[in-house]
Length: 384
Ligand SMILES: *Cc1c(COP(=O)(O)O)cnc(C)c1O
Image 1 (cartoon, rainbow, N blue to C red):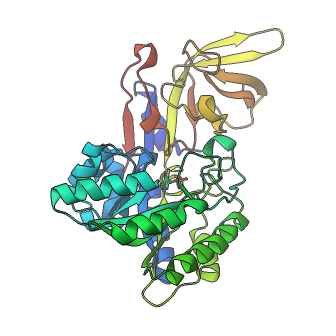
Image 2 (image 1 turned 135 degrees about the horizontal axis):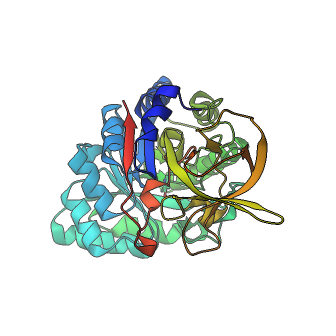
């Protein structure tokens, strides 16, 4: 729950807006950085989770690198002041323009997702008179045991290079004059809460690393991606992910040679908890079987529930907790039936004008906002 001070501040604000708790963000970043440093690991922030400039600035100040999935993200990372030496660029569909711009920025590494992309980067690097550092994004066929819409590491997914294509990659890398193989890269999905999944990933990484080493490639970087899940159900109990436990798994199960670096790309676990979408009840509709709370925020502000049935904790912050609970379907104003934040949500009896907080919305929230229905631009409020 929010302190009286903060919810008091919300009362006079125009809704809806995102509230970012910057002290919580700083605490999360420092716990993550400290845990990573204790094993000598490197963390890049997956900026697609939230590229709000205030947030990026704090992430950069905490010493993280940037993991980008578009040319504009690469440009923004550099503009914010991330060192190009700490910028990586992934994505199944990098355009020629995006690749060339990233080459001109001298970024640390391209995470390459197909044999054809290797050839294209080589050609563009030759043209630009540059050498491109690359890591192969390999699809390890590990099931992330998460929602199927956010699984990325199975053979049926569009992401990454399948293992049977590795000989073809090795062949290209041997002859491509403008490519330098920096390492191997994996990212198997998001919101992974079963840490055994990461153990399985380590086993695969070890295997694939040896495959390359046996063929004479020096694998300096093992990039194991992101995907660490968080607790959407109890945001105040577990407001910071167990970074020590997470990194500890990789420390225990990854086989590292001297000089081999381990890189991570965390998004959600760094920024989700610090954000809440604050909205106001517009109408209370009493039905025969159902009651509806109609909010002034909808899928245009936070798309995750509509997109992948994601759960977010919903709180009425104008009412005391557990006072005359009623079940509501909490919905937005957008002309789509999937514009629903939660069904049968138990809340104190609510009325027009009450403030409602949709918690843990700092990742994949603001960045997915749209103007559908010609909605207003999204607004923000920060706690310093
Ligand atoms: C989205 C993404 C991440 C971050 O995933 P989280 O679940 O937010 O940690 C990391 N790496 C790549 C390549 C991604 O696409």
